Image 1 (tube, one colour):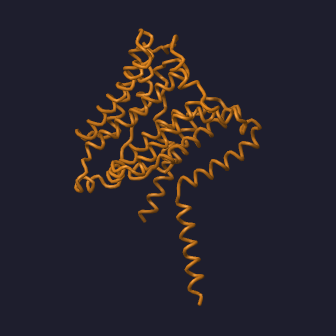
Image 2: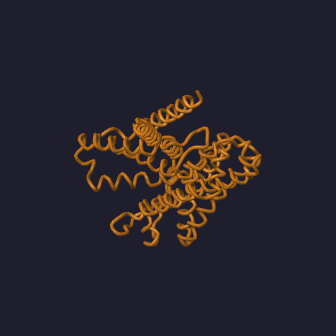
Image 3: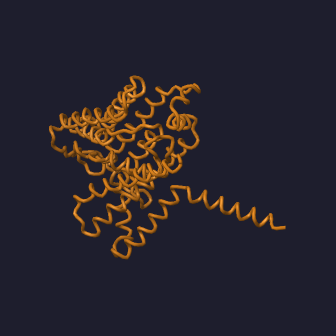
Length: 329
């Protein structure tokens, strides 16, 4: 007689456990709680202007984090994304200042990014160089290119067509175009990561690379495409930064790799590979952006932002390690 109620209770418990395990839901709850707290601490936090400013401040981080998520899912990561972002903007801006059409210059900026991703992917996938060493080395190479082109000084890009500036400064239906671009990147990338066959291969590689290879997956080829994709998104972020500020700076992407990794880990990606979603990376970026915005609203020195990002990264990685240790036991 009591079998049905017991089964219902078990089903409810199972459902609640599944919901609790959804990392994205947890982050959403944290974001909501943080927003409520900050709304009491600062009356301007929930103003439309501040919300739009906060979202705009995380657009580049979120775009780069999407690519970083794919790299982390595969069991690797990319420390060169910040430098690639800077280089793409610098190459585009420098060519534009020398009379090249801005859209053609942007294509060359993206090609430069793709080349760096191709080289990184080939050395990691084919030569089997450790991702940390390879991307750290590429970070120095690409950053060096940006400094050589600019001689260390930011380039103020003038005379740029309004159509190009519209990407970073314009509005569409009352919403900044940058936010629309981010939405497209997230939706398309999330669909690919959830539905595409190649995405499943990325997850297989991150979960067990040896087993993926034995099952017939061309691991090295997939890795090459992963780092090309990561570099492409970093390059897009660099060009959008140029469009927004009309300045090509060799330091535009400085520290971006740490922010992206922090956002991805917070969003549920794992340093051990096999886990992570695009939506999680977006939510992680939003959380980091809200924390940085809170520091500004509370009149905390901007120099503390890097320190806070570092602590957030350490806390996120520690949580990831403890979670996997608990699962293993």
